[in-house]
Length: 545
Image: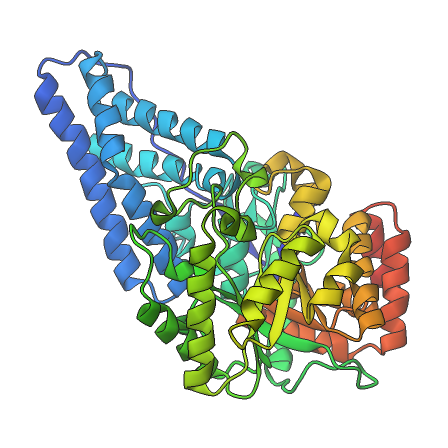
């Protein structure tokens, strides 16, 4: 049995096949014509960028398109071409120059930290594709054995994962990655069981029969075809059963826990999804990769489209979550030594309050145009003083429901004070884990610290839930923890009133809540809080079911 971090629930079984590896660099060769060698290298990068852009156009999922577009932009970055040019003029051949240039840029991104550091591994994929194209070698990527299989890899690049066929790939297992990696995000979007940070995954021989449990993080080896077939039959039956469920989120005794969606635009809304609204509308997707800020009309139109898609329901809009960790060219923010701890989220308003004011103006107009009542929250809130100022700005524009993200331990510790000024809280478990445990979200060796079952993280959530109960105000979860069906019962027991997730995660979470009373959920919460570590917490709650 191999063990990792389960980041997308569900069970599957089948033969495992490993991702094709990166191209091997040949020994350096002398360069006879420097200019011709530069042309070869630049052309390989241009063709790689064009291929990624074409795949983005064909991608059916918006998240996939965004990832591929970003990759194409990196591959076509003139700064990368300049770096390649410098290395070749210093004596390198084209293949080694591309390898060195991508390494330089990777190191630069990693030094920035935060969101940008999370994109550093994208350069590895660009390097591998460009070098393979240059040398005429097979392109690294997903195997095609001709039958459904479990995909194992050291890590999965965005360009590989975005076009995965759920009909061919049964589950994902990687040696690296964490709860917020590309693998995690896209596995949940596709409804595939997935386990990351699983040591030994790439040591499995192609064709080995394995079972994967994306809830427990266990990968079983040594099973046979008959056992695998039975696991698959059970998994299909479970999916069919969950697909037939509908209605609002409720515990067995009728206690409401709203089931909401995380989206980046109205294009993310899937037909037939039975959710109760939007728990996280990431408005920053409208701002990404722009040299100038979107106009008032552009913002108003985008916000109104989402409000009209969910008439009469809860739609929570997060104001611009960007800064030195997610730099936007039009903001013009200076580089920082540690961006994850710098000017990001609401803190941008300290330097450029007009950006926040313009966004609130557009949200208010969108609300009037759609005759809806949006819920608006600020990211990266830390102190009661910050929420006082944000609430004043929002309410002066007629926005009624004003809240804040709890992503910083200080905000959780002062949850009662925050709710004196606000109407609701929404807990971002991804960042709250990162800051509470001082662990980079993309650091594979620290994935266990970012496990949403960590008792210390649950204690911070409990403080927010208790503050919400005392104030009679809602407290939601919009981090990846909300998509875990078993953990949903714990969160409900901690006082969480809504869970926001990807559309494919809703049925299983609804079913888990419906199978337990509120008293049972509270008991689950007590067990998890009393545990010494995530494994003990999961085990205690699972045994209590």
